[in-house]
Image: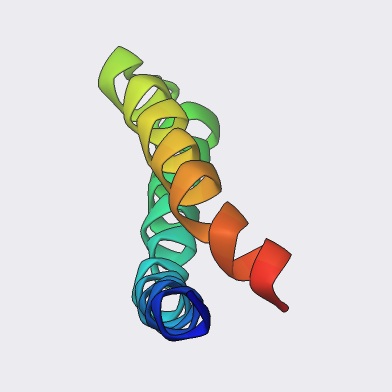
Length: 69
């Protein structure tokens, strides 16, 4: 049982570290959205939807890593 728990914890650690970079993708999308909205005065719908999807992905994939540590 402990071996199985160690395997799951290791998997959570690896996946959490890899998926933590998705926050950078979301940051780039937010910067692009703010730039197009404020500077170009042309907001887009797809960036808002993409930000929501990336945040959902980030939240769901990094929570096990957070609970592990």
